[in-house]
Length: 85
Ligand code: SF4
Image (tube, rainbow, N blue to C red; front, side, top):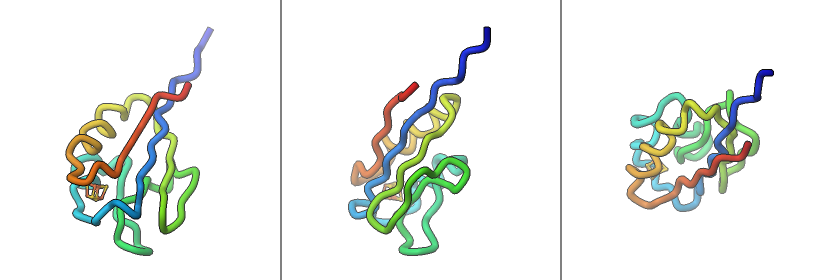
């Protein structure tokens, strides 16, 4: 039996983000600065909600370390994440 891979829900508070670029530099598989306002967002492949205030994504579990590294490197703690399934 094949079990579906767990996912990681990632939330970027785009109102707190200062657009420093550290998140996309640390984990480019998941994050990119938005063309709309220069604030961090989850890349299209994993994005489930995006507006100018928030970006929510669901990424494969194998990118957890990548997300975690970016969240820990963020100077304003704008990135949160949790395993969802
Ligand atoms: S590290 Fe934090 S402040 Fe910098 S771009 Fe990423 S989310 Fe924004």
